[in-house]
Image (cartoon, rainbow, N blue to C red; front, side):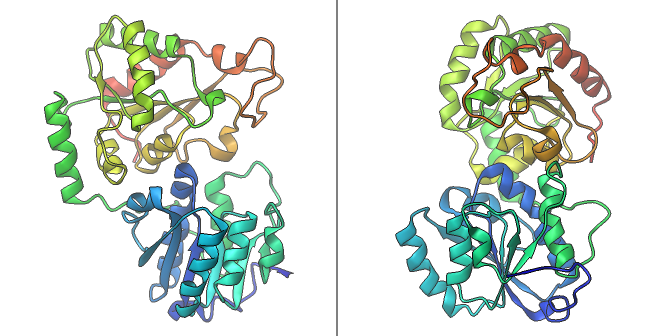
Length: 357
């Protein structure tokens, strides 16, 4: 395994007709962060053919990514990945790019038969042992989008002045979204606020009582629709939220297919959210995001781009990157964020109604 020299032209000279395997199976936010890699590769080497390996649950989103020639669904079992490797070898890939950086993704790159395999030098679980070339990560606080794009630079590609996420907003997706929203009484042509109260880690969730206060304050001030978005697993949270609020809101949790979520969020005026996958979709679309961050680092995985606002509670133990809070009082980093802070940030956005695209 060698360390890639960004000035090395070994890759750049042959990639324009190459068959490239991109390995980024999960999760939702990380997949969004990887989209600019596809855009940058296709801008530099437009005749390359790019296959993206992704977990089945995220296929519908990757299918909406510009520049992806083939989406290859996988299951997250060792047996499944070994079976997939036989089919992958038939494709005769020239290059495998592992953006996941774990043992299974590293070994899948190796099993694919690609003669060139590249990933990060600080990949976990021994994944760098399966690479032919590695990309050093010199700044631990670099944003994930920029870290992924460093692979393109290492391959000899030119990086864009502004990362391009390249969602395909299909007409049929917008038609599906409009039909669902019409049934729920939401007019997408007028200002509305997306609200995401869920997050995969419990330690990333701002208190429901705080979300309820924001709903009541914003509804009293403006009456713009507040729309809960998320998967069906968030329905239990919205049920609890309804008991805490005095004001109405629209609950779309579980109603919008994942593939249609970019179409929906592209029409939002702003988004209030925990650190979550939908947050990254909204930011990628240029929708202003107000995000509450607890144990995670906004510099590494915050909403990417300009026009967003990250609110944090300043405690000495954050960011701890932990799914379990051992601090006393518990989750103080999130509890210190006041609902009035959120309201003060979003009011000017609703008044101006100018996206940060």
